[in-house]
Every structure is written in C-alpha cells, then in structure tokens.
Image (cartoon, rainbow, N blue to C red; front, side):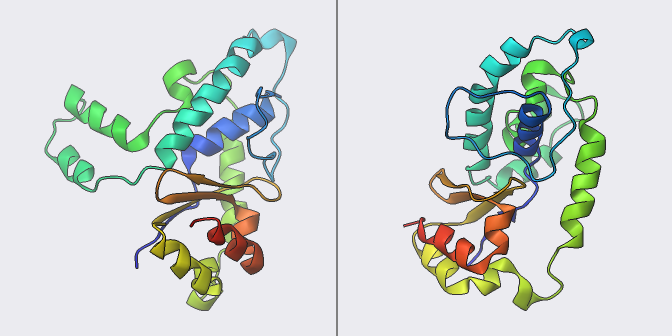
Length: 196
C-alpha cells in the first residue's frame, strides 16, 4: 500500500492566502473555511489592484488548481525533465504539467508582496507539531480506515491549513481535507470513510 501525503500544496495555499488577505468572497459556497493563521488584510486604496477582476478569476483558478492537486503525477514526467535543456520550451511545458495552474499564471506577483513572510511563519508553525514517531503519524492512528479507503482507490491525501473541517474527494484517487481533520484520529477516520 502506497499513500502520498501532500501537506504543503503550494498553489492551493497561495490561492487561499490571496482570498483571505484581500478579502475575496468567492461566489459559491463550496470553498474551504478561512486559513488557521489569518493573514493581515492587504486591502489598501492606494494599491491600484482590480479586486473585482481577482474575485471573478479566483473560483476558476481554485477549481483548476484543485483538479490538478487531485491528479496522480506520472513519474515519467520527472525523468523526462532530466533529458531536456535548461529553459527550453519542452522543459517549461513539462514543469507546467508537474506544478499545475497557479495565481502566477494569471496575475504574476500581483497581490503576493507579503505572502512569503506569512508562508515562512506558516511553515515553522506546521513543522513544530509534526509527529515524532511512526505511531503518532495520522495515517497510522487511522490505519483501518486508511486501508479501507485505499482499497477503494485512495492513493493521495492533500491537506490545507484551514480552520475546522472541510473534506472533499478530488479526482479519482485523492482526498482533500484540513490539517485539523487529519490531526484528529476520529475526524480523519470519518473523512477517509467518505472515499468509497
């Protein structure tokens, strides 16, 4: 049994930060709750940003980034990159297939000026609470439910640093959930049981 855990999905977290920092209100209700570590509000009348454009684009970017996070990567892509020239069009296309869509694709660095310091503090906070033994691993503590989910096709778990519970099946083999859900054995087991 092989399960991949992506506990730092960069493009998803970046989009959640943009949403929370800039006060975007996506027009549908199937989006994760706010980030655990709320970023400082970035809205400033002098910034000259087009919040309406960002708000309109955010759901599409979220959905395409979420779809990509739900895909299982073909290991041959990594091997193929090694045989391409630096900065070649072929290498850029392969890298795009691996990394997937992002805020940068549409808006570049706009709105992300203060993202890096937040991301650094977020990383430190998350690493402090990492399990120190195999028995403390969330997957080990919910092993029975994990095995059942794996038998039903689960091969990947993606976690996001949002408050409370939010669990969705994304793709044929992937489960998206909050760090909080994964850290709680009962909640994690219940989330895994959704994968049937």
